[in-house]
Length: 114
Length: 112
Image 1 (tube, each protein chain N blue to C red):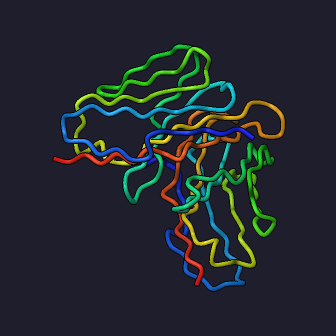
Image 2 (cartoon, rainbow over the protein chains, first blue to last red):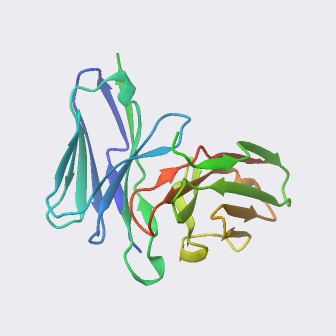
Image 3 (tube, rainbow over the protein chains, first blue to last red):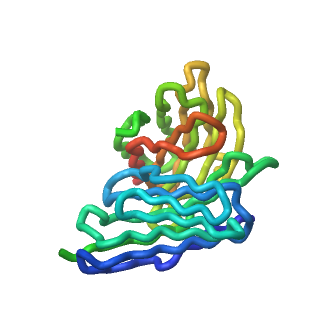
């Protein structure tokens, strides 16, 4: 079945440092989605990338979708303590009996030290 | 606030019991998804409904069942509960059958 892997599993940074998490899928994805879950909270949808090679920015966050649509990255510039949480990528199946199913990566837990 | 509501927030029950978790999607969303999140398994997709019909199934146990009602709210029924069923159960919704999903606050189930 489809697998979505994320690295690193944990990342500790000093406030102000940059952070990147990488996501790799075993299959080509129709799109990739990113979510953030604060400690004790629920996953919050951040963005969806659809096109090969797509790059999108949200303030200090930059999201990329690979040319082959099998990998993606999330980069945070100058981290702040409010960036603390777990960042998940997720890829949907397309068609067949798994249509609509979203496979989540295991997440990257980001800790920001002030 | 995502607009997705889930009740109850916490549920403590005993092994062998049956519980029902309830979810109301965001206004206008036709798709409802159920997920289980535990420390060792991460976020696991259970099942999806779209406009009342089952659309996709994940590794949902036979002891678990779900449905989506005409008013689009959904219920997840967990029966013959085991200790290992203790987890956070999230409901999410989206406008269409795919696309970004909006999660509810979750129901924390503890099976003693």
